[in-house]
Length: 197
Length: 167
Image (tube, rainbow over all chains, first blue to last red):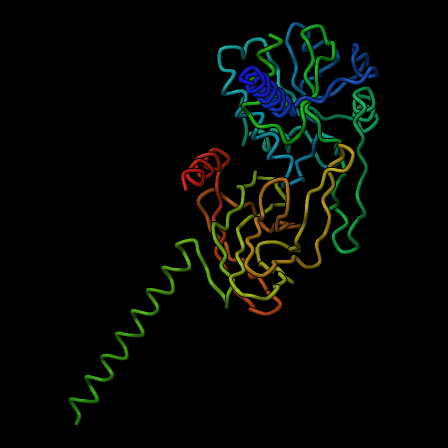
């Protein structure tokens, strides 16, 4: 009888541990077979200081990439804020990491606008923009979708853009490692990055 | 008789001054009440120099036994102000207009980053950290109320969240 209790107890404990493990890992979206590979794309973009950036500019560093736009007042600054906080948590490892914000709204997001925007976040974050077809090419390579939402008839320039919300983490060789959900906490991002450094 | 009138007038003026002080205190202390609706912690994230948009957040509590609706938001700081909701559909983030926000009887509704928010289109000028600006909310039953939105820096948000967790 006592053994039965012990066994049931153990099963319950294991079940609880498994549930905890699952809930802790919810921030990681498993790489699909499509994305679990090298992200091969040649591109020419500009950073916030008007310096040209291409596909090999950040080789040798792990990159943390988020696609967004500066006109987005709610979710984009929230994600960049969480990325910033995760970078403060990764303090000692920062030499190995290059966080990157890539705009999916290059028409409005000039390097100057991006530079001003990034002033609100961790100083290590680089912002990239460029010719619309170049931005499209990079987004496509990552499987990032974006499209202008319906324009307002009164405020034509004030359009919104629907876009994929993941945070991509790539190895120092440009290989895709994992993708974090946009709702990941700074602690979740930092903890998972540490695993791969 | 004259002295009595003087005393009464003095008393009334004192009461008036006192109520004005109390009113302004409640306006800036965070919680604002209109009918059975309480609005607390209204804030917005500070914008950058070229920003043309902003979002504001708050907590709205309905202490009545009836359903309420937030039906309109107005502010002079932007060309257009709307209630919005950010949603994730198959990994794609979309912001959409909310015509009226339901606040069920006895319930508290949070407007917070990544969810429901007040959206400002065409900011007339950037909103700076530490500043406050008025936002008028209109409820279906409780009517209109103006709250002062506090503009906070990103770093301050974390402190504010921590402060909230303590409660």
